[in-house]
Structure formats: C-alpha cells, structure tokens
Amino acid sequence: MSTKSIKIAPSILNADFSRLTEQIKIVEDGGADWLHLDVMDGHFVPNLTFGPPVIRDIKNATKLPLEAHLMVKNPHSCLREYQAAGVGLVTVHAEVGHHLHRTITEIHKLEMKAGIALNPATPAYSIEPVLPFVDVVLAMTVNPGFGGQEFIPEVLPKIEQIAKMIKDSQREIFLEVDGGIDESSARRLIRSGADVLVIGSAIYGSDDIAGAMKRFRALADRQDKAN
Ligand code: DX5
Ligand code: ZN
Image (cartoon, rainbow, N blue to C red; front, side, top):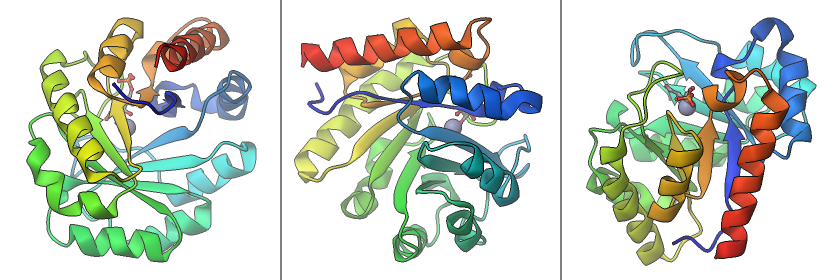
C-alpha cells in the first residue's frame, strides 16, 4: 500500500461547460488537489474536446494546479502552448510511441512535470525505460475517449505491478488512475497502490457536486489515516 497521501483530481469532461467557472470553484472549495483536463484530438481517440486556449481561461478561473491529459496522436507539437496556458503537469500516452523520451525531456525543459499514461491493454513493462524520467504514471481504468464508462477491474493487477515498479525505482512518482471511478472502485484502487484518483462523472454527473466531492475527499483522507 502507498504511504503517500491520496489525492483527488476531478476531471471536468462531464462538467456543464456553460457554468464551468462555478463548477470548478465547487471542487476547489471541496479540497481537490489538482484539476485533470482531458485533451482529445479525434485521432488518438474518437472524441474531440479542447486545447490550450480553453485551458488558459480555466487557469484564470482557478488556483488549482492543472494537468493536461493529452489523448492526442502528436503530443510533441504544442507543448509550449500548454506551458503558456498555465499547465503544470503534461501527461502523454505510451501508445503514441516513438520519441517518448524526447517528449518527456521537452516537457521538463519547459519546467512542467511529466506523466506517462497507459491504456488498459498496454502492459506495465512498456513504461519501464521511461520510469526514471517521469513524475506521474497514469493507468487508465477505461479505454480513453469518453467520460462515464464502466471501470475495468481486470486492470487492478497491473496497478499493483506498477506500484511495485515505482517502489523499486525509489523515486517520488505518483500513481494516478483514471476512468469509471466511484467510491467502491476508488477503495480497490487505493488498496492496489494508486495515490491519485481522477474522478469525472461520479462528481460532475452528480446532482450534488459539492456533496460528491466531499465524500471523495473524506474517503481519501480516511485512507491516509489508515496508512
Ligand atoms: C477518459 C478520460 C477520463 C474521464 C474520467 O478518456 O481520460 O479522465 O473523463 O471520467 P469518468 O470518471 O466519468 O470515467
Ligand atoms: Zn483523463
């Protein structure tokens, strides 16, 4: 089990974008640790969302640190724009393959943190060569592209494997999990070694966003005490 405190990173993908400032403020007041921003390009995943110009406006609306989860085919192309928009952590997918080390190096040169994301079908060993360079590993617990999908419990053994790889590396690396997380899967993921929970619809799909955020914050804090 992790000895780090458990962090909550709400994903705004299923928020009401016509009331985004207000909806971000609710999770900020409720103790979110950072905001998870799902960038989709219609190529790496079928869906399309937003990019640096929208993120810049989000930055102006919140004090929370921002993560850009780049579900894009060519993450290298506008790293500078993400930095200028105020992003602190850029997470790129292992599956986009070639030049991953170069992309991570570039992210660090721009003074942002770097994360590496894995789809459910991508094995843990594929990130071994870049583990000495990353700040975050993001294990997807759904196939990326849409909010509101069902959690894939078969990914849990891989989370345990990654947690062990991180421990063995003796580096400070966050193990973040993303997709279909509710209170029950959150507990199982924490037990498997996850220490950052990305939560989309279980917060923003709720009729009571503040209440949902409060429940996840309490769940995370209880796990901290149990450690
Ligand atoms: C899926 C995204 C997730 C998603 C999380 O492609 O990476 O961040 O929005 O939302 P839920 O919690 O609804 O799966
Ligand atoms: Zn995401």
